[in-house]
Length: 173
Image (cartoon, rainbow, N blue to C red; front, side, top):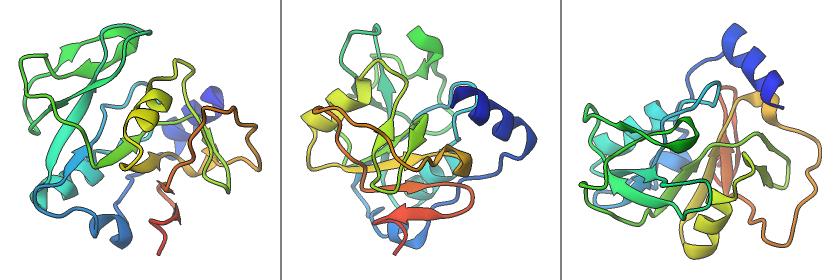
């Protein structure tokens, strides 16, 4: 899936635009978690900028190690980021920490049931368990959709997925 994602992103790519059902979630005062893409991950920046324009607070994940829990720190577009583990660009721990209402999530693959295959460290699985009321939205390239993913007991499905071609789940309405 990584090589397929790499090839697609390099040859076709595109911008991941927020669909109307997702824009409806971006109300003033809501906290939206975005991320800085690593490698060929789909870039959620257009979605994050739309959220910020609607008065949402943007947070980015901050990870200390592969095993550590994810913390979310407030970030304003244009502010500098620091290098973190696993190739991440993240806010420093000097910024305010806040829990998101909407979580934009990178992934390797997703299926019609909105199951998600992540990078393998379990960071977002633990976030979903910790924040069951947050709206979980995958951001991906259309080629990352597979027919079926085998899930584990700790896997939590997404509420929706947004790609460069279309939206799925609750964000497709």
